[in-house]
Length: 141
Image (tube, rainbow, N blue to C red):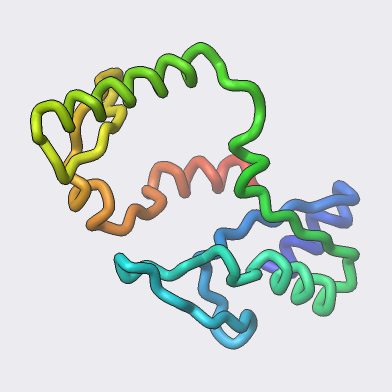
């Protein structure tokens, strides 16, 4: 990764690295992983971006900055779709409660709002599919 990053930086005079707080870099990034009530690692305070930026700068000598964009990526004004989606999900949640259909969350499936069991929504770790990885390889050469 470092040699690729150095090559991109020399060609474009900038480079961008995007990392999930959930990554594991054995021996390079120190984290004290704590678990939430569901047994998932709490990622909020891992500091992977900061540590990764330091690692890059130390190893290839390029000035490196990091940004945690958790809230920025959700910024901007809500579109009509956003507003309607909020309304539709709220209506479905109220319907689930009214029907005593507990243990479910309102979710967008295709173009429909449906009740999905919480266990189904959160019980399995969702990973990046092979299609997304292939798309990434096309755009990030």
